[in-house]
Length: 440
Image (cartoon, rainbow, N blue to C red; front, side, top):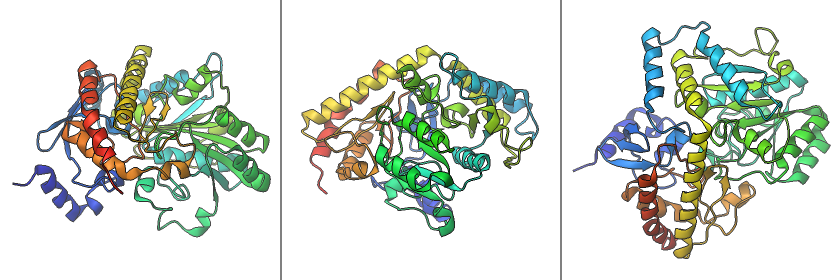
């Protein structure tokens, strides 16, 4: 008797490339059949065969409150009754833009004056780069190896996320002249940053950086590195684009930028991109920045961007509900749960004699099979990643759903209570033993 997930995957592969609509979902790095999810509630997801799992993927971040939070669902249902899409301005768009701008602050410091809503994180970063080029009149972009900023041309060179999982250096279909406009340097390397600006400084439009890297595993910026990026870019007339598609409103009410400001690391990015949590799980993303940069966007400026579904009323309703419900108490709960589980993961692997580290960035954490937290992409790739597949499947067999790649962050939600955390902790020793017995 076949499993319903196997049947669905067979059918999907006949009509969808690889059977999935985003590569990491295919389980390419862990093997086996992906779980086709049928429903989710709180901290639990249910697959097509009716099996429940405690979820540590959280839709790759958006489910900060937990899946299908009743108030967020009600907000979307109410919006749907009024109409699915208008292709015209709505009051909700204005409210969400104001809410984003108001949240991203530290005292009197507010890096976001204007906000443009779009549909995806890829669209947000693509627009931010075009805007930076329009603002500076320059073409070159600096990015960091292992950082993932969506799948637009020019950003897939030495990228993380699914590209890291698939071990691809880039992507077919990207013209060489476009790829040549992206300069890739090592992350957390001040000398590399200085060198690229020394050679190309008057032609660099912007540096784009994940606020904390979380697509090659979790790799936090070294103390002062984000500030150094801002200072170096500004000294050469370039902009800093802070990619908070993943971290924005996930690790702090003001994103990772806010977390760093609270810790005393003060710097000002020129453009910030947001996604995932900002849409509450619906297709919505945004970019924001100071007025003189953002006002270069059409219709008031010469940098063109448009989208029929930008600011979709259902997505806006989900985003508004999620951000309004994301109180300091929610962040405190998620922070505490993440710290507890990261400590339990560390202890289980230590007891099993597995060489590992549990890197953290705010309430994001991950697992790396090397002795120290990686500082850059090369160190992240050098780990004993073969140990992850047996660890992943051992956890799944015990009813815990992990990201199907070692190069992804783990996500907690406000719906993970003591019962769920205790069940995850109970599953860890067997998974750690499976990792310990793995061979390359």
